[in-house]
Image (cartoon, rainbow, N blue to C red; front, side, top):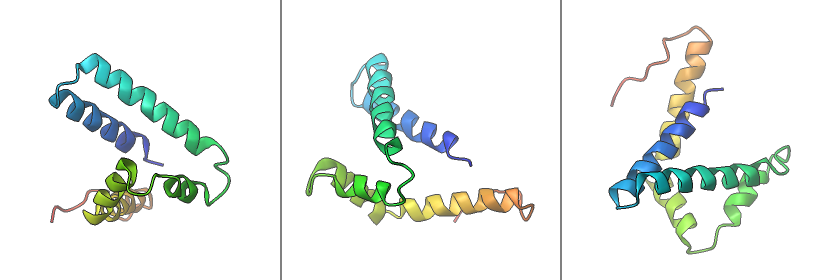
Length: 104
């Protein structure tokens, strides 16, 4: 599908955020790249199990930073907006639209 660009966008955003907080750019890039490598390796293990991603989310420390970060994204509707972006791309693939979203 069309997941690569959005993942790289999140990675770039995370790197830029770290740099804006004072982390040297080379260190920020390395940290983000290595962190995402580890995250993707965790996700790849047993990825044929349809419950794997739910299990990884459930493994987050209750009250911890990762759980809070996910909850904050959920409260802002990030995943609903992501679904809309994916639906728009699907619509383009199906020849129904040009795949662009109208801004709200």
